Amino acid sequence: MAQGARQRWLFGPGSMMWKVNRESILLLGGRGALLMQLAHPLVAAGVAEHSDFRGGSVARLRRTLDSMLSIVFGDVETAREVASRIGKIHSRVNGIADDGRAYSARDPQLLHWVHATLTDSSLRVYEACVQQLTAAERARYFDECQVISTLFGVPHDHLMGDLEEMRAWMRSQIASGEVHVTPLARELAAVILNPVPLLPNTLARRADFITPALLPRPIREGYGLKLSRSGSLVLGVGRTAARRMWPLLPEGARAFPLARTAEASS
Image (cartoon, rainbow, N blue to C red; front, side):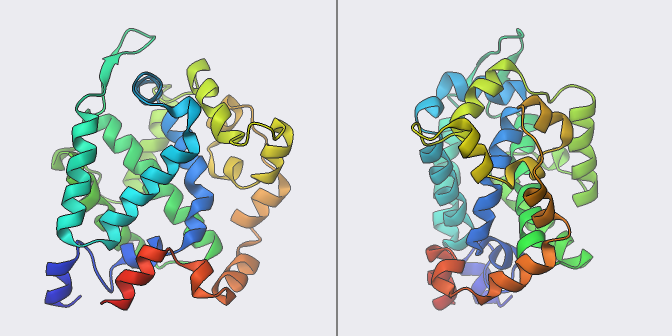
């Protein structure tokens, strides 16, 4: 990356953040990431008590997407302003969960869980539907994601050493029961799995075939989801077909507008 690019953008041309996060197909992982986040009881408590999630999960996902794209593809000043604004909102999110534990949106462990779910889902969807990354590229993407984690207040001593360590930590959180699907998470998940009120739940879940494939089995079963053959194919043996079709789409459909604007001005 050129010196000027480092000064203008937080990441810039040549970064893995630009390479991966330009692809609009990452939206396929959005609902899976949200479900993983809500599977942490303290995250679910914060969302339930301090947001309008039940009435606007799609709007929340859109706001989250817009914020992340602004950080990745905006200039350094924009990235810091967005992170600061979100940090101020998080500073007001605290309370007591149903299990009696205190929670805070500034808790490094909770912040790390949220960012880990986003990192993991983005990589898995990108590699399934766009192209396979090398080990070095995955490592670079992980390191750049850590920059965003610190921007949102995750202390350096809470960061994982590499992608494998992060994924092992996520598995341990689920295996230990720290992360599990509670009745509150299932209640909140209803508006994610069926965002259109008039659409029957069964039809909505069939339409979203990839979300269950992104979830670990205990989390998937906790939400009452079943892994469809089509979802397994996209993330498994269907990778080759997905990777061949996606690059054939026009840039207007493939890349997020903010990514195209940043690339054009670089």
